[in-house]
Image 1 (cartoon, rainbow, N blue to C red):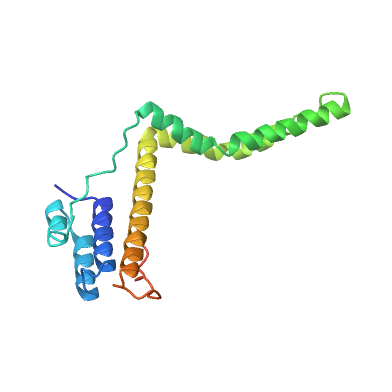
Image 2 (image 1 turned 90 degrees about the horizontal axis):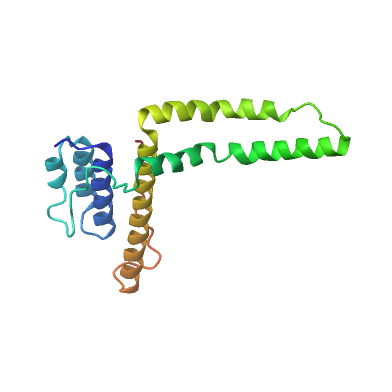
Length: 180
């Protein structure tokens, strides 16, 4: 089965952990990382991790258990989340000025609502047509997994320092930024 970018990134993250733990030399890590990003199938990816402890080939995609309806609701709240409070504030300001003037004045918040609302309307219509809510939720899951992996690496590093396997002032190995 063909591997996706997220699968290659997950293997790269596992290789990075192995490097941080001292299980791989820098040149071997670099070689395996290049092979991971060039891999086309799960078999090619799995072969890069077989000699490392707890090495597993990642799932095909992040697990998102929410229903499509729930994902749409969350995504729409994300897309429209900043528009509603701002327009509500503008309408409240307009209402206060009308009360202070003692009469209804020109409803100027419509310009803020329309001008700012064009972006969310376009994002909503195109996003719902292309399945963006599920992709957005999967991206959130991937980001959370990456944060969890980073926390685990920090904990492993702290344990290695506490056991005296690493010097206390040793800087962690810096990784190139992912350009995907």
